[in-house]
Length: 391
Image (cartoon, rainbow, N blue to C red):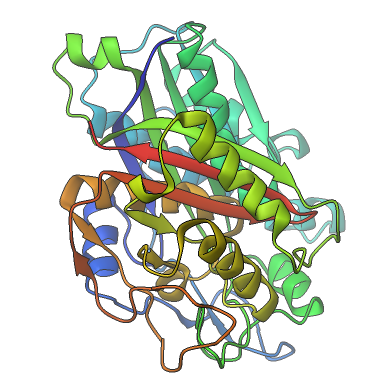
């Protein structure tokens, strides 16, 4: 079986519109949440969000008027990952594309269906609303497998899992894998109806946490067969070494309190990879800042890894970018391995007896990271864990 290397990283987020800016602000513990200006938030319980300001698309073969903002984020992150990989052209049938999302072009869909007139100013069809993977293929002229994965907040991880298996089996040599979502009024209203939004800031694992902060962005990894990466002397950030997935089969929006589903996904990732739990140096948590989610995740981590494995949630800094979240967090795992530093969980003030973990509070931690685990959970109890390793 072929090993799978990460040779390119692209990130669009409130913390930065490229990989380096994003990583610097995460390590500095910068709160990148701000007052939402894109639409009126006066009817909601909060006016704060992870909104990307002054975005300029980075695309070479796509007219910005032909795609929505979510697709622009995805294409820009994919183009950055491609450039970062330093590869000189792609064989059109050897590269697969897996892109995840929660809402897709939610704001465009609303405009088209409600006939607001906004859609007439652009050239977006109803068929482009949920076809981000196909848009990436058009941008790069790719004719391999293209899958659009709507697994909500686990979508980025599922995209990476799909790409990993495709390359490992020899059915592709390269793959774009990631996720994208946009901060829309539709998404804001949906999470507000669930009463899951924090009024001011996201406090993962803190005793006084009140909810999540909705966000937006895109994260894309360029994955490559290890033999190809080594043959061309590519820079390798990390390799994907394993994964696990499960379903709580419990509730549509509330994780199972016993955390058995979360534990099953982590257990599968670790035990099928052939490593020990103590080999994992860092866990990039799902860490939404909601009381139920953080308690269940902390219970799972504590029962499998103990209290001392470093865990952090970058959602405390950039908010919850839905289908982009675990893709951006996968980038954070690779950069933690590359730079030997763990980003912090900011806004942490008071420990919670229900969250007995080391959440790397408020300040980054310098240490070698040989293996990082990326946790992600979604509506319906769809749990994932992807493991990245030092090469």
